[in-house]
Length: 156
Image (cartoon, rainbow, N blue to C red):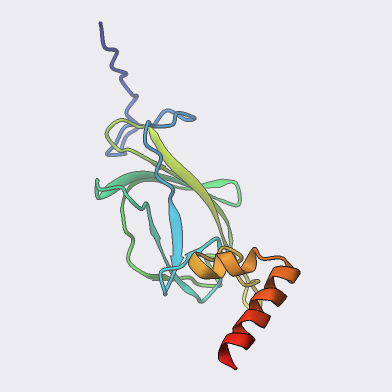
């Protein structure tokens, strides 16, 4: 059995190999943006604080490739988790496509999209609840009425 090791082109002055696009590692890590309470978000309004992480990734650094409104914005090593950052209306409004790569192998860990909306934008409440809230949100109206009636009978 022979093993094949791929060599990746170095892009100077980058400190890591240019990752091969479109490859997915054996283990997939989902990059995520988080609000100040640690809840996953896909959109914030400029002026809001947020952070970025790749949960489960223990390497400390990733190779991050990011576009803003379709234009290259960042392509280098990046430390995760990122400290909290407060977005600015003058510089940060836009849509970001973020891809995280293993800095040693160049294999894609995961990707996500994130948006910084202009001031005054109302962001709808997240529909991605967990635990009992997710269970309650998935009940039909009849099931909710039955649950409420049962609770009423228990309390009386």
